[in-house]
Structure formats: structure tokens, C-alpha cells
Amino acid sequence: MDETVENEFASVTVTVDEAGNDRRLRVRDNRTGRVAWFDALLLETFVWTPESELRALLDPSRHRWTADPAPEGEPR
Image (cartoon, rainbow, N blue to C red; front, side, top):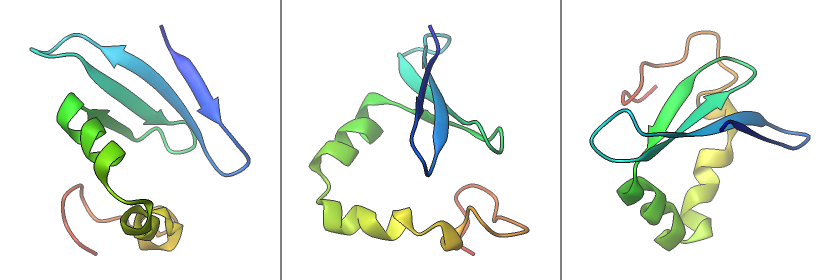
């Protein structure tokens, strides 16, 4: 079942994906259509990482609002 999660800054659709070996979350950015998958290890990492270390990821000028975003996994 798809669930949309949104606020004034973002809108994503979250689905539990069971097509692989392990369950994972499929998250789709509703503005761009970009999709990412989050397995249990990555989700647990978000839980244990201090919020101060995650704040740099919240800067949309790093990747989201650029004309030519870097391919996934590559620095800009």
C-alpha cells in the first residue's frame, strides 16, 4: 500500500517493497519522480545518527535544486 507523506517543503510516496530478498522501503520524490530504496540497515543508521550530522543533508542546494544533479553516489 502506498502512503504519501508531505509537508510544505516536500512530498514523497512510501511503499514497502518485497520484490527483493529482504523487505525495504521504496521512497519516491513526488516532485521529480526520483526513487530511492532504504533497507533495514540504512533505516537503522538514520535512527542512530545524531540529528546534527543529518542537517547537512537537509540543504537542498547540495543536490536537489541543481540543474544537473550528480549521479547517485558521486559527489558534486
